[in-house]
Amino acid sequence: MARPVPITHGGQKLLSSVAALNGRVFDTDPVVAYMLLSLSRKERLAYLPIYWATLIQSALLNHALITEADGFKAASVLLPPGRCLDNAWNMLCAGFLGVLWRIGFPGFKRLWNEFSGMTDNAKRKGLHGQKRYYYLFSIGTEHEHRGKGLAKAIMRDHQRTAQADNLPIWLEATTPGSRGLYLSMGFEEVEEIVLGKGKVAADASLQPGGPGIPLWAMVWWPQSTPTPTPSL
Image 1: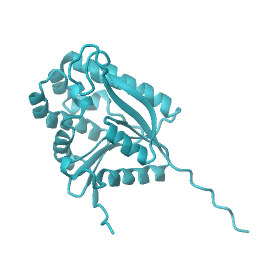
Image 2: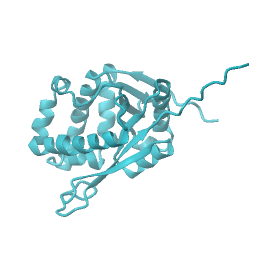
Image 3: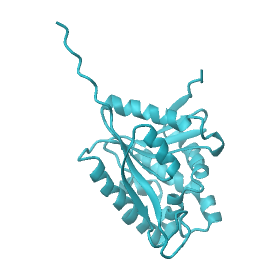
Image 4: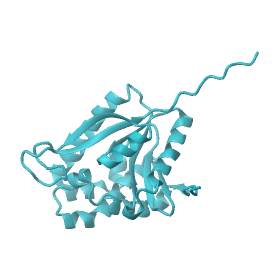
């Protein structure tokens, strides 16, 4: 019998660990590469821990929960209901001006006008007017520890929390592999979104007329709890 995956939760004290993990985990992620398109591959890899630290700090200022599995072999960042990452004041407090300086105005447009605009439209479609939901900002597993059920254990933990609150979980899958994992865990695909269509290839390399980068907006709904039948 497989041993249970040890899971712990935390906040600010776990920031540096999860930022470093995400810098390694998302080293080839096409959506992240597209956001940092102005950087060379070498520059991007060096910058990723700073980029993630800033984004996650903004999430923490919005009361995000960091969850890690088995000694930070995998970790997630989950925003609670009623909180959003693009709170302007918290982003400024998190140091996002430095990120904007690094990615430039074109990067700002990719992040806000393109990614945020398209995913917000998908939320309106997929959440059916539901205003309160959990948002899984990131989840990732170290390359050498994939396939061991660590991300799945974290996701099950989040699903139990959301089920207890009777609220959905929203996320965007950025690879076919993660999309398949979420589908296997009861998530529904709301919409396939394509970033950079006509500009980049599927790996975010520049390609005039390229197909762009797909990602998948997905939602998980809590199961209905049967109403107990009163005893006679």
